[in-house]
Length: 394
Image (cartoon, rainbow, N blue to C red; front, side, top):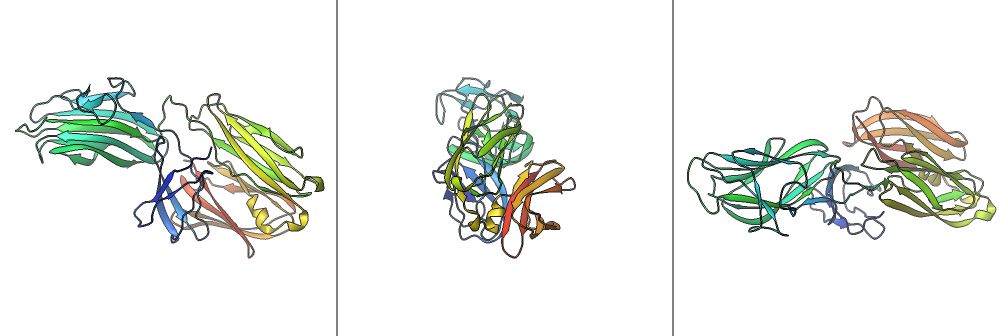
């Protein structure tokens, strides 16, 4: 489902942020070719970081965002997730000092040269951001609240500091995040404590249900007497979910079949009577959440079939991939194409020449020797070019 008003920022550049429109579409402008890190934020959703390689005339990138998990300690304890404690005293929840709501977490009561630690193990499903509000009242420069990811201290605060939001990048994988309040050998100042509230987590592996998402872009054009093919691909962060992909609305010349848990095929051949615009609606459900993909198909006479439309019909499956991926597309004639793969640094990894046949073409791409990460596939000749990205799994 498209998400509007999502904020897209290009990190470490002077470029102004852009926002998605009501169709979930955004456009990056006035940006040079190269590698960039973008941050996507939207209230109520987990913030994510995405590394991209931008080329001229290719400044639109797809991404998926998921509802955020916010921990405000409103249960009055630490049972919202599997928190644990370390050091000389356990953290406590309290109602006297809060950023919002009724509760916050307060450091344990400790003496000089002692520490109190609140920690949480999380399995992060995609690169993102962890944020929280903190407050400190301590001996300035000596007694500190510190934040760690995997025992690496990322920042610390002391003295009299009111509520302030902090945020830190975090990569996909298993991590331990912790907040430590530690005292030196003497002196008590202020409340001699630290507080945290409103922890917003990245997308993590929990019992929370994440809705499925469409990761394929619909093919919006068809040609009379030519086969139309749209390979529908969906994804679900809850990897054990059973997905059902169904067609709600389509023209009679199309057929639809679900091939696997995360894929389906919409195909058919229109005739002269089908010229015009057709509406299609596909739905995917994990038995808890339901997501729609609505689009139109413009059926054109065969005389207006151009190479650029051939290239828009290219599909990569599976994506993400492990050892092999299939590139499929329709060609009305024999054409020479060059196939290239680039990494996110813009380095050329692979080149191959291919002569297409009339009809549906399928090319098997061996990805077993690629390291895990994001890659860009480029297929072109002297008339047109097509480029997209795919993900190589470990």
